[in-house]
Image 1 (cartoon, one colour):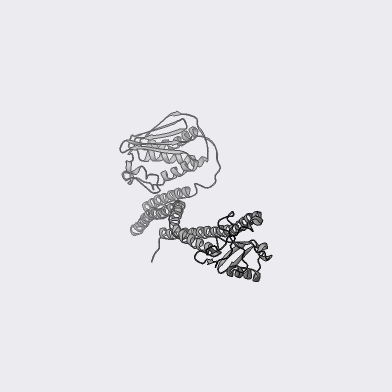
Image 2 (cartoon, rainbow, N blue to C red):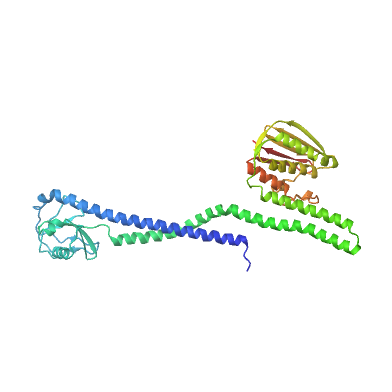
Length: 407
């Protein structure tokens, strides 16, 4: 199956968009994991500090705050996993934070379990993992055997972190679909000039092949006719004309392809250059009975390559002569940094005005004329390269005006 350049480019855009989305997903997920872990560590540290800040300043006064026969109450564990005291004396640290619980009964089952567990795995961090839960404590109070000590369950644990990460991955995974569409749109915008260049290149190759094939076919016919009739002079002359046309086409193609290459620039007086070009085309205009008039030629300097400026003006003047009517006129003015070339030729229809600057495009009413449709494409490239402006005003069967704004 044949895959066109456009299809290949579309595939590459999809691959690039998917790659960008995956990279974005991985980076954001990694940052989120780092943030959550950092938050967990910071939260634990703040819990420990909070416990110490609350307990030590009031430790002495709280040792004597006792209540008798308190009802069973949950302490230490996760939600749904709490253990209840069987009764007895309980220290309620009412003046501390609500999430701090305490017991002074060394013979309590839960207290003994926690203390025994702490003695098995002493911690320097003031925390204890027990029964799938983590507890913070004032370690000196417990390890010293003091009958008054405090424990506080950590509000954020590893399972909470894992849950948050999984929820984030699920949420961001769904959001990545939207990101993919946005990234694909941006990639499409970036690739748009390349896509247009590929389309332009394909059309260029097709048109160039067609334009070159025509004179080659004519040359072949002339040579075959010469061999058949044994008369060579006329077929040779016609073949030379066709070869000259091919050479002209190739020169134009080369000019378009190298127009953006670095060239020597200089300060040029547009009025002098235009007058020089007009003198070159005077004979051609007289041959076609075209009257060329020049008015208001003001001095105007630009920094450009002289050959580029020559190609620009020559193409416009050549077209004004070629597509003019017998006995027609061409009026040229240079004023306020603008070059106006106005003719009384066949004109250009409104539907063709946007396309005349395309390579190989010829408007319907001039296709019987000699030419390849490259001149105006070359003009547009030169204008764009120097940041000048070009305006086309035309009416069919009335004439055309090209305006070049240099400043």
